[in-house]
Length: 112
Image (cartoon, rainbow, N blue to C red; front, side):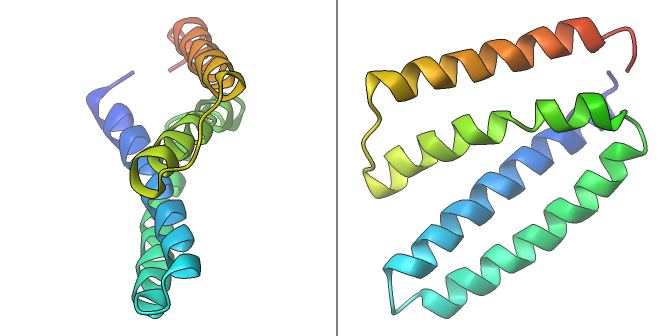
């Protein structure tokens, strides 16, 4: 994996996590509704551009499972920004997602 592809991957994860948190904010706060919604849409477009570029380097069968880390980052972001509850089941699920992504990274190292 090159620094470029790792950077694109990190940007994809950060953009998608941020966009989902902004969409949640737009649904909760009438004052910020349209600003948060517009911010989420703009981040979606940025994430789409990064995703498109990432797919020029990585096979879809590897890139898409690696994006599963978003489930963990969004849940953690919900806990941090919106005080959402994370149970033991959530914690175990997040740990399994991270382990799965790590396994894919190790096994895909020769392909990328």
